[in-house]
Amino acid sequence: MSEVDTFMFNVFIFSMILNTAISLYGIFARPTLIKKIIALTIFSDTANVLAIAVGYRAWPTVERSPIPPVLTTSEPTASDLTSFLQTAVDPLPQALVLTAIVIGLAVTLFLVFLTLQVYRLYRTTDVRKISRLRG
Image (cartoon, rainbow, N blue to C red):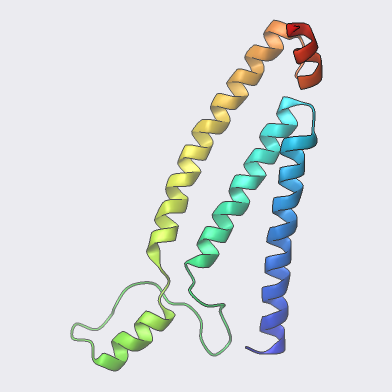
């Protein structure tokens, strides 16, 4: 890998770690339920991006960029298969992320519904106030 590729890889990893840390802080330290839901959504999106990055099998470079997982020749040779296995994107993480997005949307809608019900009952979404109201 060249210096630019290494730098971009380091920036990517650093941004994913920072995104995860900020979202975990929002989940555990913020008192309102809406902020917790937003942080949970950011956390799940970060996990999805990491899963997609794992599917690349190698960091894309100028010499070797990823290709779709489709063989275009009807009778591939051994060298075609070798190069295909080294550069093709793994489709399994993409399918899992697609499923995770749909499930995440359903969970987020359910949490928003629960937050609305909590607000209707207690007139606040602050977890500290709700715990004091409940005794």
